[in-house]
Amino acid sequence: MIVTDLFWAQPVSLDLLRSFPKVLIIDCTYKTNRYRLPLLEIVGVTSTDMSFFVAFAYLQFERIDNYVWVLTTLRSLLDGISIPEVIVTDRELALMNAIDRVFSTSRHLLCRWHISRNVLAKCKKMFKSKEEWDKFISLWNFLVLSSTELEYNEHLARLLTDFDTYPEAVQYVSQSWLIPYFTTNRAESAHAKLKRQLGSNQINFECSWTKIHSLFELQHVDIKASFEKSLTIVQHQFKPSHFRELRGNISITALDHVLAESKRANDVGIDALVCGCVVRRTHGLPCTHEIADYIRQGRPIPLDSINPHWRTLELEILHKLGEIADPQSSFLIEPDVKPNPRGKGHKKIDVSTYRDPCAFELVQSGHDSHSPMGTQIPTQDSVKVHKKRPAKEQPYIRLIEDVDADGNCGFRAIAGLMGLTKAEWVQVRRDLLQELHTHIDHYTHLYGSHDRIKELTHILSYFEPNPGYHRWMIMPDMGHLIASCYNVVFMLRGHPVPPIATNWCKFRHFCAAGYDTAYSRRIEHFKEVIHSGVATRETFDCINLDE
Image (tube, rainbow, N blue to C red; front, side):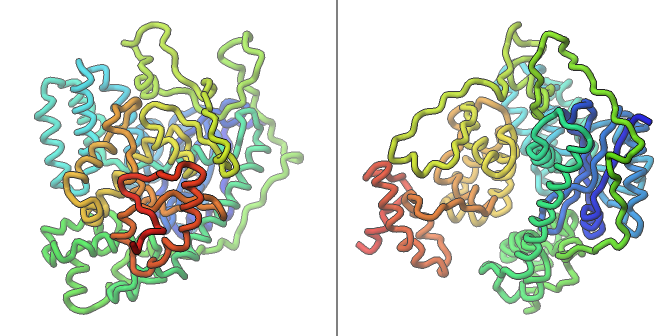
């Protein structure tokens, strides 16, 4: 019997699904195996905002029947597990129909990342000039990033009014995307992590299982560590008395959301209409007017006001585990290896797991129906020039991320360092834009004006290649967003450290007093290695702080 479709889930994945059944993200990825079969990934989300693999399925075809079989198999494993409340996909019609059949009570959302890529692929060629297209896509991005229904309606009305001379574009986004509601994407990050683990597109089922099993184990360790962090670490911003019942009982991710809402309490008060209650509806967490009321009464925010999803910081262990078949003793036969569609002229086997360009990338590269013949699409094999670094720097260089110099290079570098693919620079822009607007009061105080917030929003709200210099990543202002958004600092023992930003001195927490002195020698060493006069408009010399 030849294998046509193959589904598997690890016991630890079902443990995670039992604890976090509310949301599933489902999407196919390609170039992962020698049989050229699509690999369907099913991904969940923990209370600490980490993605986890629920199950995988190799599919012979991407048809309704194949998807129905996968989802029915998954549902058969949900013995005692709640049916997912939300399922997120791209606009794969066969998958959408299968979800309606198998999980008819689940709410189906469309992925915002895939929507934006489709808008680019379909609409850009409809515009007469680059200026008009830039204006349209900028307004579209503001629309999809709206935080309230009122803001959404205002942006939508403006889009319909400003672009009534482009009825095809307006009709496409309205009928294809704006009627369904959409969310952000996690599937692409999961695809990237999986492909790094697989390493080649020429592996068989047995090798796939082994590599993915290792990925499951590493993922489980990381998730348990995130639980432990939420249970044991109390950050200074959560020490006020109204967080008393929440500390150590809900995830730090949830605490961050509640903290952001609490900062609006003085301005909003207990007026629910002004509050909007977006976080209560979308996250199941106390919104601003609720928090203001608790503070007014002198009460801590009660734990039972938090949705159980955010209070789950351990796994429910399944007692009944499925047996894993020995490939050597199985009666199943591997499917045939599909021939290379490019013909016999290519002797070298391409083992890359990097997917082929899709429609929006062809448009971004200028290689669409309106492009000149012979336009080349840059590939990962493109020749790159590495500039030789000064000899004094070389002992401290552990890794060089040589990203494409297309105006998004800073965002590509961050994507690579955070474990994403360099092609996921769009996600970094979105992350930083969300960080800026989630904590807008904080950053307005930090940067000194609303105008600076608007400038940074303008820079980050551009999701196409080759932006002009006015859309580039700028430092040090972007550095504050990156550090706060990703909450990661890479610092190796003995390595030189650049001069410290003056804004750190202005806005640091009192508990960080004296940190500058600890790094004074390393800052001086940095100046010895690079240049004695190295500085930025926002740096100071730690040695001369008291002068």
